[in-house]
Length: 93
Length: 259
Image 1: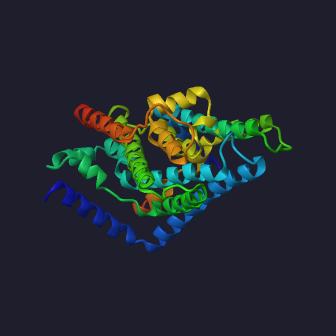
Image 2: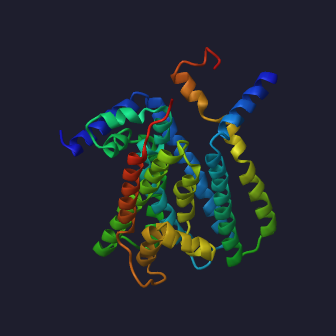
Image 3: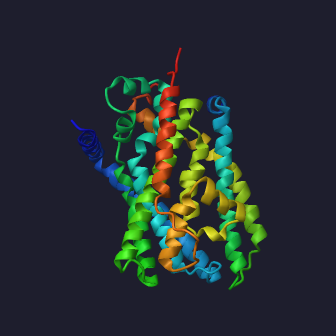
């Protein structure tokens, strides 16, 4: 667990080195959030058939999803493929 | 060797290289097909639930959705070199590009023609055909010409976005993910008609980033819907020219990285 946490901390530090890029990543997730909420909102506004779930619940569901999406890249980033190709797996680096 | 010949040779090499890993290619294409297919199921489910989207039917939305995905798949495949370009700036490898006696655009664009995008393209094509047959478009020459123009301009537009993202790394070094909201986000939003979004969002995509002018307005004309005061036919091409100018500025600004 300890080595894992320190690798995580290292990766986090590298990824916030380029501050503008980090902020930009967040803006992107918010953008997708706006698109999703708008699409759902428009469907609800056309309201030919009703649904059991109110729009508000959907919106409450979308924003945390977008906010935590970034974690996916930090935890599961595409580094593995590069390591296989560059034969870095055996070195554990 | 002329520029075009060289470019085609670059592409041939790239295609041969990708086909070395046949299983990877097949699985990757299938993967994108499945992922984007699920996205479509989501849209279909929403239409099935709500019965319609403002004044649009499912078939009309299919035309938007299919076109957006086909266009983006092509642009994404053609501009792959620009997509991964920030890495070249970061590692200083761009220096070697500058040494060679060929234009930078040619070398970067020729880096790869990403075949596996065929998954997204196939899915978009299927959805588009379904929609087009049901609403009855693309059956006369005028429609086909307009459709071809939408396609070419759309591909130009998304290539321009990806090239701008690459050019931005001349200044920022790290790739700016914010451009993803215009490329991937652009497709995501263009899958639905523009008029379902908030007013500020529509204005942004019409006047700042002309995706609405490239796709929404001409497609509305195709569908015989909402009339507009003008029909922009070359907005995508114009946007690509702007991106080219920014690229040149960026190359001039490049000072290499490292100590």
